[in-house]
Amino acid sequence: MKRLLQINKADNVAVILVDGDAVAPRGHKVALRPIAKGEEVIKYGFPIGRATQDIAEGEWVHSHNLATGLGDDLEYRYTPVECVPAEVPAAPTINGYLRYNGEMGIRNELWIVPTVGCVNGQANAIVERIKAECDLSGIDDVRAFTHNYGCSQLGQDHANTRAALAALAKHPNAGGVLVLGLGCENNQIDRLREEMGQYDADRVKFLVAQQVEDEVEAGLEICRDLIARMKDDRRSPLPITKLKLGLKCGGSDGFSGITANPLLGRLSDRMAAWGATTILTEVPEMFGAETILMNRARNEQVFERIVHLINDFKGYFRSYGQPIYENPSPGNKAGGITTLEEKSLGCVQKGGSSQVTDVLMYTQKCVTPGLNLLTAPGNDLVASTSLALSGCQMVLFTTGRGTPFGTFVPTMKVSTNSQLAEKKHNWIDFNAGVLLDEGVDPERVLDDLVAKVVAVADGERLHHELTGAKEIAIFKTGVTL
Image (cartoon, rainbow, N blue to C red; front, side):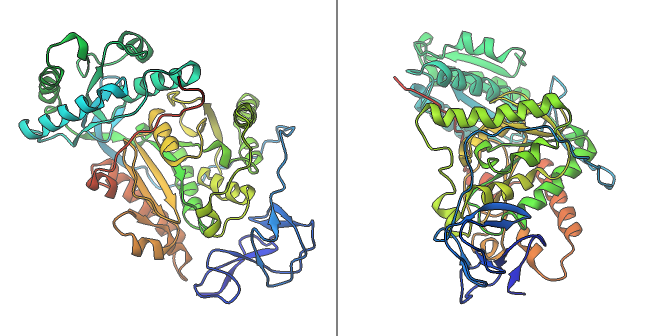
């Protein structure tokens, strides 16, 4: 393997590809020519910050001599670029579960959804009884999605909790749902039912613990009825246009923007060409690369919504007295990422090169095919949950550091480097690190990823599903009473 990779011919830094280099760790940057103090450092063909001191040719470029060049809110102008659809092979079909409203589920699971953290224990007790006493053949999983919210919340925090649980209860990956309330909480079941709007009353049931003598026994009986209905559910061939994929990265390293993220971008472009849907979030990790997305907005209205997406999130940080650019994380820096611009330029590559068709608010259901942007933070658990709450049946999660977690839908871990895939084979589902190997055909790797996505949609389990690592995390914004 060669020592250095210059990603764009305009770059004045290159990435180290090998272990044990005398200058810097693998994934870090070295200067390709002298860079003067105050001069822009260029990677991916874009500035990733300014040199804080003179940098010699061949010198390590990192936090000791490079700092962000980002400022506050910017003035943006819509400068659309032409997005030419790529030629793609014939679209595959998905063997999924067709739900009452025409949506597709890729799992047939039974979920207990507590309205408030006070009944988490009862929700788990119902799950234990179901697993011990019921025939679950044909049912993929039984899960209680516990959380600590639903009471003593105000304003947007309370609204977020209610909206998140309403979206969770209606997700097509669930063939049956029991919403379990306490009775005295702020998040009342009647108000939650209003938030849900239209739902399948045969598949979503409600129980208030304070209104029955034994809530665990009552919940078990309701779930027995749901299980009986779910046993008749069968997979059937459905068009890939019904598939919605979330795009997420976490624990990024110096290879994230070289291997895994661009691979997901090409997958996103292929899905868009097939009429399917992808959703990109992590708004703070768009800062510094936002104009790339803005100029791909399908019209001026979508462009203005992207501007608000960016500026409103900056305003959110300011409203709580927090710095806007407190990023990258320690793990990112250890992996070779120095500034937020560098992280963002790698992050947005997951969105490929196709048009941005819509912008979604938190928990807003996605209805527009193609690439969508979603309001949510960069936090791995919150962002992944948010993608699923907006309708994604699967999340593709790229990582250079590794993580075992999964949200409540299948969460595919895509490694940025082969060393991680080999070391944490019990976490990683797909290795994009092979793209660094000489002679590897990128189109073949993309075809392999598409095949993996289809297999998972058809029922193949991911590592986090096998270990039971499935969680939800609700976006918390403000004061808790």
